[in-house]
Image (cartoon, rainbow, N blue to C red; front, side):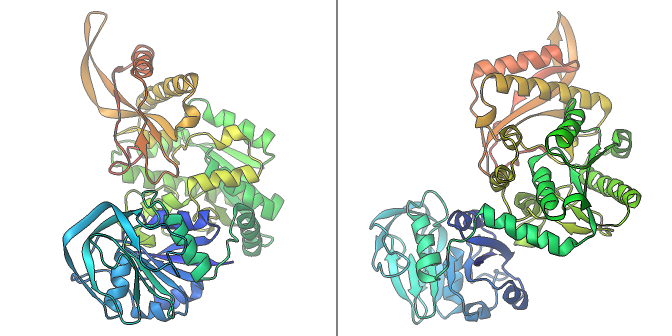
Amino acid sequence: MNKVAVLDFGSQYTQLIARKLRELGVFSEIFPFNIPLSKLKKESPSALILSGGPQSVYEKGAYLPSKEIFKLGVPVLGICYGIQLMAHLLGGKVLPSQKREYGSASLRVINRKGLLSGVKDRGQVWMSHGDRLERIPSGFIISGKTANTKAAVIESRQDRLYGVQFHPEVIHTKEGKKILANYLFRLAGLKGEWNMGSFVEEKVREIRRLVGDKKIICGLSGGIDSLVTSLLVHRAVKDNLVCILVDNGLLRKNQYQELMKKFRRQLDLNVIGIDASDLFLKKLKGVISPERKRKIIGELFIRIFEEQAEKIGGVDFLAQGTIYPDVIESSPVKGPSLTIKSHHNVGGLPKRLKFKLIEPLKELFKDEVRVLAAKLGVDEDFITQHPFPGPGLAVRIVGEVTNERLKIVRGADEILLQEVKKEGLHKKLWQVFAVLLPVKSVGVMGDRRTYQAVVVIRLVQSEDGMTATWYQVSPEVLARISNRIVNEVNGVNRVVYDITTKPPGTIEWE
């Protein structure tokens, strides 16, 4: 199967490049720009893409890979920083531009024989650069330009090297998908063979080969990611899979009991239920740091899995529902970006792990996992449920986690979900939840002064969890939610609405 390696130079759009390629039926994987050449060769990519990035190629400390990447014998496409990097390393010249280009521009098509085949003249493209390509390398031609960029598209067809100064992966570039398709199919000669059906077959074979006749445990959280992981593993190893659902005391109201019934009756999974709520709350006592919370929770999950594995016997593997956004936010492994937050099943794992990890979904986005779930026969209600964090309500309580504070956030969460479903908004939204703040505010109830907790409510829309916008819910709905929370949840006298997008904020507060 074809695979495109996307080298990450820190662009905010790197993950979007990978998604667009998958939509075109070609599997793509992101690697850091400085991946050793020997390791890159072992990945056997059929083509390379160099992402954009915030730096200038001539700066001290600029992200510069080995020139040998252009001698791997596979096509290379440079995007934004990537085109400048290609020119810089191959003898061209890049300089600061007197006129920077940010936003839309009109692309003049000069040559349609390659990358711009079938692309309309004067179509809109999306620019984001402050440098200009002053001189293109020997052997290249200019195929497209804009008013401020004389070399907006360059090509060396004999060497199969291509570059675009704009971002074809964003929706603002009107024919960006066609340009990427030209690169993949017309110029690189790849085939659109990747889909969820082939993914299932490949992963089942891979899991079966890795696990053999050994036993494997899978931690279920109640979310779609861990469920799909368990169904994939079950398809590969059948009765050698044992699933474990831990009540960590941080779940929604009645969530543990409802999940146990669903997993056992509807999905025919072998599930062990563990009530460890007292243990988790004890370990979280006095802990305020969200990173510390996540690590404590991650470590406790692993310890419980190890204890259960000892009882089961012969368990060598642990399967987890880690998905791509978890990996991206938890670690700079995939590129030069900084850690945003450690996810309990990535950054929260202990250094010494007694199991071999199997994470079949770690290169998929959330919406791709949902497509996969449908192929595996999961019912629509479960597929369309909103994401729920692995650390549970611990990361929806800013500050210390206590039984009293859990009761408040559970009550607010239940009311919020009821009202959102009543209004018919649930399927329109990516995520809906309440957050309890570590502050109190003055209020008045029954002619008496109160000094009670503040609850934040958050409703967001998103496609994959990498970016999100807050939902413009009607004032009437907000008023009803606020009124119910203040009146029905003891200890709350103020409700506020979060109108922050991602970025700059994350979807969750911690």
